[in-house]
Image 1: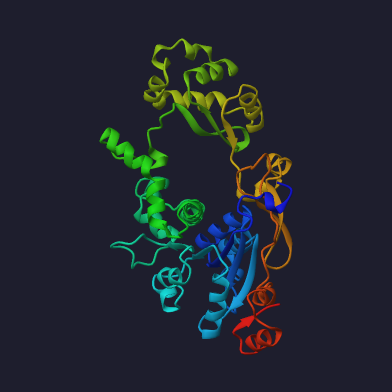
Image 2: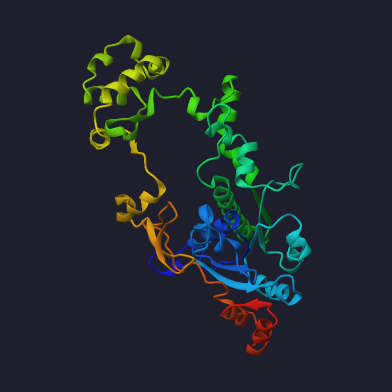
Length: 396
């Protein structure tokens, strides 16, 4: 893993026409795994370079391990440059509105005619069907796909606290690209891969759909659900601190009771099994909350960890920069922010041969690789200068 060619997708070239989160996530994952990912940006740059608030971290997070070339695709010469790059590619990835790539002559059918081995990944709001004309956002599909209902309280649908469908939609796009690469090894032919926000969201709530299929009862929102486990809650403890504590088996229940001096509960026939305790939660949980309320979160954490019981502090995202486990295991890597400052970013949550695939290329400056990439596909210095003068392209 110390050598670049040890990464599994080294030698694979990806050309991406992507913006925001979903499409860039696909390219980031492939790039993290060794692919050469070339991001084609408009002359003014990807809009996420300029977003504020909740979007201010989008570009550095989802555009590492990529090169940038700036092209004006509204000009024929910009499209011609893109086509030259695509001729060298294994994968094209895009997440424009339906019809946009076709207008540019960069849709799958057009490119397949030029290169039958090309893999083409489209990231959309909906797979082809009655909804595919709609404009989708992560929040839109969370609302219509049941996730917001399950996350919020009764009568108060609430989107999840991260761009779960955008990120996982990009992840499934990358998985589809990987599958298509394997298929190409067998058949010699490329194919079109489609990933969509709505269908991704339905996949996320499938467990609740199947709960209804199994029981005939609709799933309640998570805040008011009947949990499958008796002790599986956030507890407010000393000084108003909060901590999540769980005991999800009969064995863990016995350990929990002994650790906190609650042996009398072990002898109570109403609490013999996990299912008994689930039915007894109405009176059991106030008793447990009262018993633990005087202890600090740190004290409870120590007891739960010593007894191998599940627990978790209630952590805010920015506090994870200082998480000892993430820092000790190399789960955070140096990253260049949009303003040039330095921070850290989470790496992919997996290891290959014991190592986390890291950051080989910092998020690119706009058009940072324009000239080098144009030279590679046959443009001379005078041609590159002329393209820049006519604002067909920009950058170094």
